[in-house]
Image 1: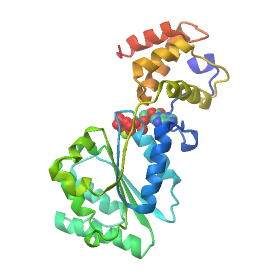
Image 2 (image 1 turned 180 degrees about the horizontal axis):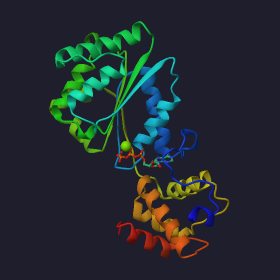
Image 3 (image 1 turned 135 degrees about the vertical axis):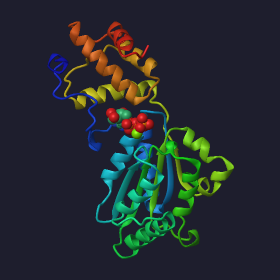
Length: 267
Ligand SMILES: Nc1ncnc2c1ncn2[C@@H]1O[C@H](COP(=O)(O)OP(=O)(O)OP(=O)(O)O)[C@@H](O)[C@H]1O
Ligand SMILES: [Mg+2]
């Protein structure tokens, strides 16, 4: 296996990477700061970025940083089920038995949030991922659902996350009620050229690498091909390790990366 060949103790870029093992990119740190600000102010925040930019990973790190005796996190990726399933999921997440009709369910969610804040002294934090998939009517519902006591208090934190066109959509007139209430509005940028190098080295070190495996030109090729998006970097680096091992290359050079790009259908 390539792991033994390159003296790696574990699989690099594994899905179970701990927050303490995160690469501290400008945006990773920026998002953590923006979310901890939102945690203090409460209310609604938006986090957008291209596919594989690191949104879900950053949200998971934020979630794991929270004190569970003060915050109750309800994480919901929108890809599962329809809109009513989603509202039922929010009610369940608040420990309620979901009501049948939408109007009742709405009131139940609002009361559930208030009860949690007032009686249990817990701030619910809703993390709604993959929100670019939400229909317009649903985004409009959210503005109503998370409207408390004439907006004078926010007993909750709501984080909406998704691809960049979610931000574009929220700029449209009919989404003003929601977009005007955004306290935090963060967009991931790709990793810089220097960050790509540091990112790859970081992941390989976390996996146990003792010495450099990639040549500078190989990293340059990955940086330019990936345009700085983490998931593409992950895939290219892993494919390069597989090819490097097959070809018995002690160091992975540009040629190996080129093969990895072609093999991964990424060319
Ligand atoms: N700061 C970081 N440190 C270490 N690894 C990271 C970091 N940011 C992203 N990654 C890596 O990039 C991968 C993709 O990130 P993630 O799944 O969070 O992207 P995403 O923006 O949610 O993408 P999508 O829009 O497709 O859901 C993660 O599995 C992780 O390996
Ligand atoms: Mg994601």
